[in-house]
Image (cartoon, rainbow, N blue to C red; front, side, top):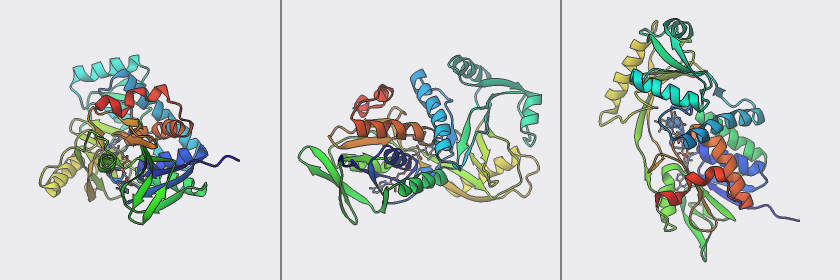
Length: 354
Ligand SMILES: Cc1cc2nc3c(=O)[nH]c(=O)nc-3n(C[C@H](O)[C@H](O)[C@H](O)COP(=O)(O)OP(=O)(O)OC[C@H]3O[C@@H](n4cnc5c(N)ncnc54)[C@H](O)[C@@H]3O)c2cc1C
């Protein structure tokens, strides 16, 4: 009889949840240890699923593959709160927008150039619609905390354990990482995965591993639920918006929220007044709350996925984690359990940053 490998996943944001789900499905005994279920960056995300922006081709392809993996995950876990609502984009100067369209269309991204009439038909409540924009119908969004909780609950239903505790350090057995030391005791494991967002940095450091990570802040405003005003993602200059299934308008001033500076309340109020100006028939639209989140961003902006430089330790830390969660979880789980390196992950090893 073969015994299951025991994997401890530190973190229960969208990355830890995806890891736990894929590891459980691939036959591991999984224990998730996290201080906060649903994550830290995850609840503060704009949660746009995309392969847009100035990415090198290999990274575009990775992101695009992950968009497809969301659909695979949704088929296996029905009810995931995904919306393939498409993105209407005009937040770059015309020549840059055109360069983006040309490059990404050449790579196979579904970019369509649309004019005033089509824009008005798609987003009739935009107060000042542009004359032209790009429509990427294959983009979408997910409600990230609900999705994380669904993955965790399903992993639990298939045998995973979820422990609410703080991990204070890693257990060593000779050169190997053999478990974690938590606020409620030690847990031994065959593998430890750091999926702890910015919290991965001190944990890696406790094993002598440097994880070069930045944590740029981003402020996002959320309205009270409101009548349907937006069809899809709207990427206007300095204002990115979407409307959730329950009717909340979620908005940031730039790619999913920019630095709020000192006076967060004032920045949130100003941003929300721009949301109201941008949407017609919105007199009673009111802000319910705003969030400030810190993106766990490796130094070159791309994910860190792979062996952590010590036997028994694996690291999965990234920005665009909402886009990348299903693919990162699938491939990382396979590598951890089979020990076979996946070429698709080669560009994302920690060693490139050291
Ligand atoms: C403003 C903003 C906008 C964004 N917009 C987008 C977007 O549009 N599209 C996109 O794809 N991505 C976006 N992102 C990025 C995305 O949200 C993150 O990449 C993703 O949420 C990271 O998830 P995670 O699970 O790695 O980390 P987190 O959600 O931060 O979760 C970390 C987990 O680790 C646990 N933890 C940490 N340290 C410890 C410890 N010592 N002991 C126990 N538990 C610990 C925490 O409790 C938590 O459960 C955005 C992020 C922000 C902040």
